[in-house]
Image 1 (cartoon, helix red, strand yellow):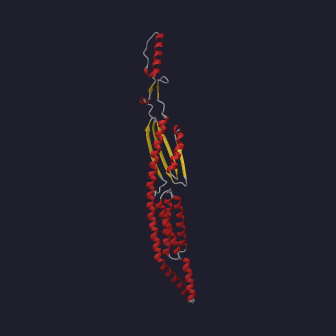
Image 2 (cartoon, helix red, strand yellow):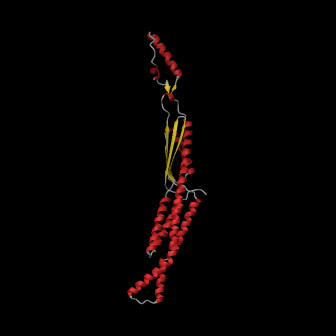
Image 3 (cartoon, one colour):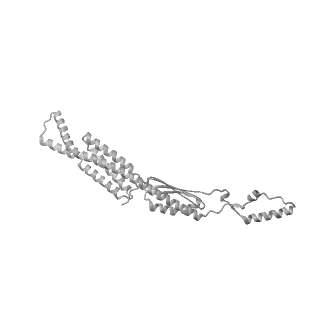
Amino acid sequence: MSSISSMTAFARGENAGAGGTVIVEVRSVNHRYLDNHFRLPEELRSLEPRLRESLARQLNRGKVDCSIKVLEESAGAAALVLDEPLLTRLLDAGAIVAARLGHSAPMDPFAVLQFPGVMRTPPTDNDALQTGALQAFDAALAALVTTRAVEGRQLARLLEQRLDAMLVETKSLRHQLPLLQARLRERLQQRLDALDIDVDSGRLEQELVYLAQKSDVEEELDRLETHVDAVRQALKAGGPCGRRLDFLMQELNREANTLSSKSTDAGLTASAVELKVLIEQMREQVQNIE
C-alpha cells in the first residue's frame, strides 16, 4: 500500500563543483495531468529530456516548474590562470624592443598582465557541471516527492475527519426517520382538520403511504454511506487516486442534493446542508491529491 500524495510542494537542491554551484528549484501545484516546464541555462539545455524522464518516473500529476541556475566562480585572481609561455615570449619581445631603442626602462607588470591571453579563466568542465546539475536535480526531486507525501498524509487525515462527521449526520438522520414520519402524519392530519374535511381513513392511509415514500431518504443514506466507505478504501489503497476521489465527491454531492430535495422537515434540511458543507470541504482538498 502506498500513501497518497499532494500535488502542491516546493523543494530545492544544490551542488557545488567544477565550474560553479548548481541550484535547482522545483515547484508543483495541482493539475489534471503531468505538465512540466523547465528553465535551464544554455550549457545544461541538453539535459532536459533526462530531467523530464526522471520527473515522469516519480510523479503522475501536477504542474511542475523546474528552474536550474549556475552560479559561476568569481573571476578574481584566485580563479585566473597565468599563461607562462605567453608571458615569457612577451618579456623576450620587450627586451628586444628595449635594446633596439637604446634604453632599458622596466616593464610595467600590470600592463603586461592586461595583454590579451596572459591571464585567462580556465575552461568550464561541462561534463562535471552536468553531473552536478543531475545530482542537484535528483536531490530536489527526492525532497519534492517527500514533501508531497507528507502533505498527502495531512490531507488524508482531514478527509477522514470529515468522513467521520458525515457518518455522524447519516446515523443521526436514521434515528430521526420514525419521528419524521410521525411528524408528517401529524401535519397532514392537522391540515385536514383545519379544512374540516371528512376523509375516509383508508384513503388517508394511502395518502400517508404515498407521502412517506416520496419523502423517504433511506436509500440516499445507504448510498451516502456506501460512497463514504469507497472514499476510505481509496485513501487506504493510496497511490494516484485523486481522480477517483473527485468522482466520489460528485456522487456524494448528488446524494446530498437528493436528500435535501426530499426534505419535509427543518431538521432533515439542516442535516442535508451540513452534509453538503462537509462534501464541499472534502472536494476542495481532493483537488490537491495526485
